[in-house]
Image (cartoon, rainbow, N blue to C red):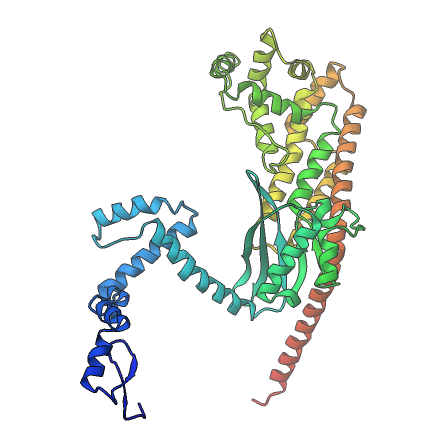
Length: 467
């Protein structure tokens, strides 16, 4: 201790003098409360003794890997973590008695193993790219407003990737709340300087309408805080869905309302469905379940119209035979133009249906989306100019003309108005995006020219080299 008259107790760590009493000083120290408590505690095992400090053998490593695989499977397929309590017991009984990966352990593996690893891999990937697009949307889960923040980026030799940065609850959906939320997430990850585009729904909160002239929206606020050259990209699927629905409203009959009414009539009524089956047998058509349609479900209109056409005669016989037929359905099935208009709308919906599925592809770039929309516009204009009709439409139209129910001019008028409405809506709503794509096309054009010159120069050098 550096002092000859003082010693340190190895049990409690106390320092005391033995200059006067010697052995009696030691006996007195042993009787102190501090020494007694420390001596008593040392008789028992330490907390660290309960932890296994031995290195894992091969069997233990394999067992840990098996448990990790099951935890990854739960996470990958979005299964309930609670199910692992049952699954763990099943695996233990059938395969490995030492397997123990219930809901608590599974959650800890996901949080403390997979999550840090995924974050680290994402940071490494993003260090290789210079440009990032940020995406956001909002969804109501009961009383909660859940808002994910996603990014899209390109990695050479791997392609386009989409990852979720954050998925949190917000107290509202105002432009200020969303802007602060997105900025904080990007700032936390250190991606602010790499963001070049903002992707979201075409709502007023995000873009302030078709002209994007307002200042109280997420896009404008992000341009001010992140990048003044930020590119705003709306949802192409929303645009196409809204365009066909807007055009459908111009038709003489509200077919979308009819679809909803028919679906509600049979939705939970077994007796009505049984009666409809009998009418389908009577008119010699196969019964199929009636499909509903929602304006917020982009791909539901085309299948619902197709099913209505397939069962038109059976539905018509059923509704015109019941006493208390809903007025809208009675008018619809008594109208000789109903089937013609339904077939016309279904034919156009098929075109939009296929295009929406194309633009919803996971790894599609904005340039390719633009190409799909341009192709759709060309087809719409071509159908309008060439008066395109299917064989079934032509047959129905000829029958109606023979019966003096419909003239060619009236038919052409509502067709032309329908196609013009579609074209105008798509053009107006895609212009902000397509204009910004002109810069992208110019860059790609310059790159093609540069690559062409480099290839020619390389060929010239090879020709000039001596054999």
